[in-house]
Image (cartoon, rainbow, N blue to C red; front, side, top):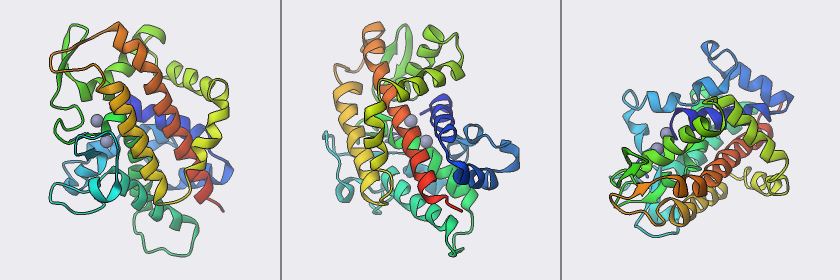
Length: 263
Ligand code: ADE
Ligand code: ZN
Ligand code: ZN
């Protein structure tokens, strides 16, 4: 996701924290964040140059198939296992688990929280679990209405940005409120099942990535070829998927922090 997508995920998550998790998040956040997880949710994108090792941790690619397998797909370009967004989610879940334990061997839990909050967002962006041959849609040039874009960018930014302009007076907080309202109404009976896959360190990240490649095939790539013009028909049919993935990311991030951050 771009800046707004990550901001939405972290705002939804922070609003769902219980007392203990809320306090621990406040302690771990840098002072400059002023207790707003949303304000640092894109930190992991800003430090890609400073921490080049973190680049492959934002996504996972399949060999152009609509299913995902950790052993086959989760590696970086040099083939090192676990170096993908699903491996990163597993790794940072483990680190956060130590917050409430006596094991203080992880030296920077602030960075762990910021990486984790960011990667939980990315793993829910359908094209962050995409095809290797097109780099998750990055090499597919399309038009977003009249503007030249690539398909990956449409899903990172344009759908969210157009939704804000069209439906929310260009106000991101109104879009967040609308998604939160859906969580307590239209999606209320699903929320429990989203949360159920939050607590086990290995399987859940793989579930999120599997959901992602399925959504990429069924919605993001569907009907799109090089040069496609994407406009209202695509925007209006895909926006519900974007809203759902943002909601799932926020709900699951909160569930994990609530589960592990106990006093
Ligand atoms: N670079 C290569 N594959 C990518 C993907 N699926 N998402 C984002 N960046 C990528
Ligand atoms: Zn992206
Ligand atoms: Zn990212």
